[in-house]
Length: 345
Ligand code: G3P
Ligand code: CA
Image (cartoon, rainbow, N blue to C red; front, side, top):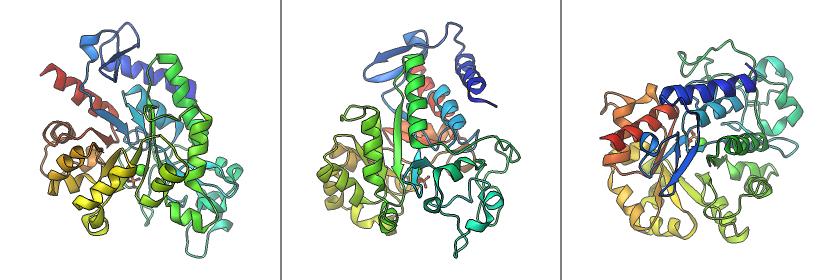
């Protein structure tokens, strides 16, 4: 399906799902964007919906189509994961290699590296543009979520970061909303070892499109504190930075009182594995005490924690009981609905 048709479908879905026959317009209240024609119908608490890899629960992740659908489903921010090509272009792909989410093995069998991967850094942008983007495959070739979308659909492609930004800004122009970009720089140390400065390239592109200030609708996220510190202290960006935190074992030093103090010197918030909050809910209060936002990941219909009966229940508990400020979700329409229902309670 070509983008214009899909865009029409997304806008229709949003309007239809909210029972709004007057079209979309934006009301800005208390610092958050409200979609819709009346304040009452679309008011939401001051918490955000981050579309994880786009609306990846419905369409192949990191495609312009998945980003467009996320926009139409009420996401406040859309997440691209960023990697760099051989010729230095930032592209939206989750892994440093291409075989999990594209048909690279069929199209470029000769470019397989010695360890069996097809690395983004070994491909030019032109070569990457020849690939079809597919739903996510595990190492053994099986689909991670076999019930999602259509594994045989071959008409989607890998976007560049610039294309993604232009799409979101264009939709912001069309709708009057102000949806943001929540970019993750992937494996910065690995990129550096391969002669690619991914944090600098990311900042340059964001600056090129007018994102400079602390209140611009952008977050830059990384699991590695070093590039975040470089962005803050050497490249002097004012854009808000998010320190990602995975398992307690690996990230123990960052989870201490001193570690959180340190994060507070360079970041605007933390993005944690949701299980970390389930095991240790006090992390949210500790972060808030330091004025750090808390944005856990990853929520999806297919991966609801055992403690909950539905994604709706899980999202509500995280937003309401655990008091997180936002979350990464693969079905952004469901998170949008949960926040909207909360207002009506
Ligand atoms: O960036 C938040 C979350 O996406 C981190 O995990 O592996 O999905 O990029 P990953
Ligand atoms: Ca990510």
